[in-house]
Image 1 (cartoon, protein in one colour):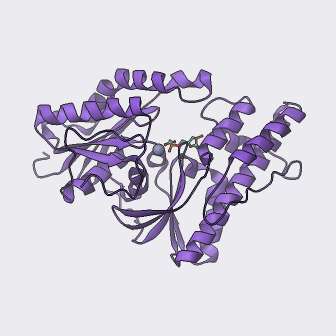
Image 2 (cartoon, protein in one colour):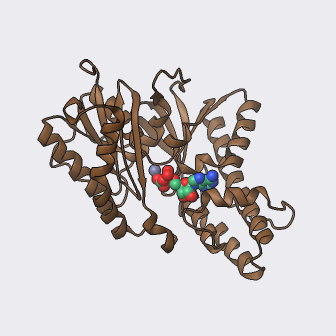
Image 3 (tube, rainbow, N blue to C red):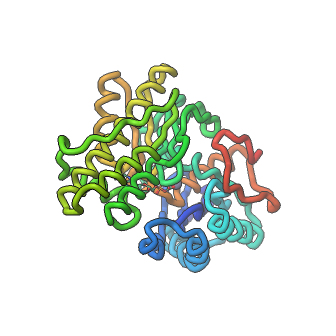
Length: 343
Ligand code: KG4
Ligand code: ZN
């Protein structure tokens, strides 16, 4: 059935989601994710617990992906895995699994940069879907629990970071403020929900001032913490604080995107990472891009947050370029997006 297809198994285990996906000629046949509930009670990811959960999940998740795709392991052309950046113990589970599978099946293993994966998620197609793809060059705002970056993307692997956070990532700030508001982890989606009910005139947080295209969110977190301490913890106050905090974060993201578009003269903006699900961010960026007659692109929600399909897709592009991992390639907890490795 899949004789002439290029079939890639993609494995993602950089943080707290164990994910596996199968793509055939760039189209997704299966995209399975096991979220780790164990971190909820700690209000954040506990690295040791994450790697243990990955070990428990990886075999059933890969098995479920192959079943859903209707293929056997012998149909796989290559196995792509997240080699970094991320938590070392978590990365080791996915990379060891992928390398072992590649030896057992005598197929290539392909090391993928997680941040490149988020950006390339925009090119993923579902079966028979005619999807509009951004043309190169474009700018990508990557906003997740671990990263906040503006990246200039010239080609599949030619990327340059032109702005980034100097302290917390946007998603991390959302999660920390959610925790202070006694909302469960990961709190970003809940802050988004509460903010919708918030009174915009009650609180106002200072907009962080950082040079150039860089970001800073730790001061905002402190402002939120003081306001939370000084006020009651009723539902309306939580909503009002969520609104003020979210407004300050989103305004900052939008201002920097506008500046980056102006500086580079590029009119295509793509948004990647979990925070791209934020309703206020989407609304504001759509307005900005309409105003400058440009275009804004989002991946489907399941490809915004961590997933195996983005790793499989980036792996397919690497396979086409003949770039494989060697078995002695080390996992890279820190791995800049513009690094030329692996070559
Ligand atoms: O990309 P992702 O799934 O994982 C990382 O690589 O970090 O992003 C997860 C982050 C979390 O911090 C989560 O709270 C945030 O994305 N997030 C949101 C929303 N949905 C997810 N933040 C704000 N508003 C949302 N609607
Ligand atoms: Zn991610």
